[in-house]
Image (cartoon, rainbow over the protein chains, first blue to last red):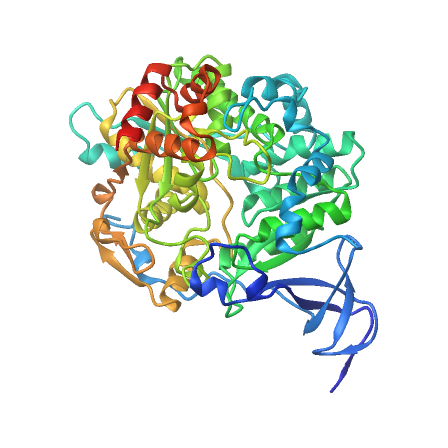
Length: 93
Length: 470
């Protein structure tokens, strides 16, 4: 596996609560899942994907977790075109 | 080492809150239900003039009020003779960070700075996170935003993913969490570990910050139309937008203005459900928050909620997801404004109200918000399709939350639906009875409940007697 260099912007994941540790009164489909945190930060030492690491967030706070993503990016978009919207408001033009 | 289990952290709630806000709610609490609301609001130490000054320093307020002439014309085409009120919109997207939430965050950021906190933390998946991050940036404070973003498949709601981006853009640390109410647990741990200020949505600071919005609406309408607005429509979720705006309207002398709440109807979807999470096309401004927060405000991350919507609400309109998407598209095409879902929810109700109101009256939609990748209605509809929701054109009465989104064929089909206010009030009283047994209620409790429900004590007594009998 390739090493990710110290200082790289990465995303880590950490399980905060296992299913049996979660809040009471959750719906069944939620209760069976772990409660999970994802956070981005600068990697504090060389590591491989899947390793337990420490990152420093944008405000300089340290967080521990499993290294998941190198250079995490925002992929959200305007989505594929919904044709039903195109004709709204154009009637009579 | 402190116990970090769910139960142990929740049990330390009160001490964590006290340290993270520099205020003790015990000074105001009178019983398990009653507290001195007005004194709590007064003792923030900020008057309206102070708030205007603080907000002007950080690019908040003085937003334009626009008349939606073409949309009003369209409504008049099918409204009855003499009907079709003028629709106005307050362009709150012009605030720093793109929504009215900048008003709500501004005083907390100022207060945190004044009291010497190093940073602010808030649990919010909406515009409020971006607002806190933006205000913190301007005040030189650190900021942590905790968001409920993704389901167990790891898929993020696109609108909330956009909020993650916005918060990081303003330099905040963003803690992205899976579905569940434990967001509050993680907030408590974060406040305890960092010593940051709790920029909760529901503090007196948050609500006082919104009062300027009501005052501006009153002043702008009076200046242009020479009278107070007949109705103001407010998208309703946690209740802060409605409470703050209504208090501002009252402070400006608009005591006859109808305060109308509006939420998107998401009846049938469970807010803590991992599988329902991405079957919603609205992340806030919906009944999943609007109804529970109206009928029991004290379910929040502070001991007593300063946002108490039933105190001020005259009417509650529901709209469907499809109706809001249709009106969003019309706002763009007819009025040249591309705006996000929050304000467009109340704009949708304004169409229904304008149709019923007289032509010489005005109805104000008191906010807009920015839109863009993730938030845009095209993305929400394409995301719904990807998640197996049927999207089609037809009669909006066929909308089924989580199953079908029906986009109206024409504006005339946008009709919304009225919620029964007394049913909400009775539900509130049932919750109050759970919090504190009725036989222990004092005259002080009755007076508090009456004020909280915009009713008199006799009404409360008769209503609770009716509930007890059943």
